[in-house]
Image (cartoon, rainbow, N blue to C red; front, side, top):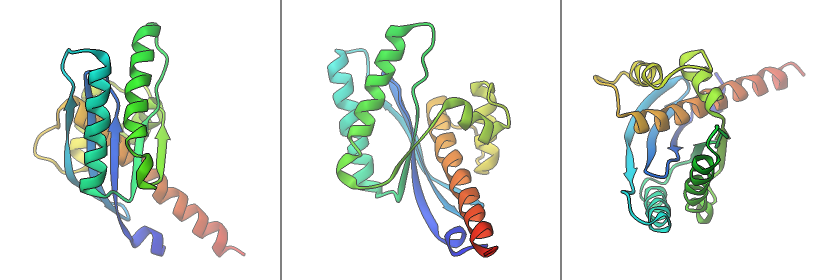
Length: 175
């Protein structure tokens, strides 16, 4: 185990959405994960610009209050409905912009990458993700879908950074 593996870090995971933006905060120390908080930023059905303001302000508050070491966010994927993809992109941009003043590293993951890391299958459905998040974090009940997705983003990042650290140590140790 490397020093990087042993250091405890706090990761904020974000699952952007124009109606509900999920967030999940975990601590990771090596392969040990613990949930700090999770939930959804509900924007309601009002004017789209007002919903983006809510996402921006809420994510900014989360970053300021929780002071995560790293942030992970899901990348937007283009589906059949271009209008939905565009709105999702706007919501993601509002969440990202809220992190800019913090100087905290932001990492991006595609939905398939996240599902692969959590469930072992890139085409997993929401129920499977919720179940595995519950198992990986030893929760008594499955979190709400948007919170589970955000926790999955954070867990994916924790696994990715742990693997990258071990790989770097193995390559560096072989010199």
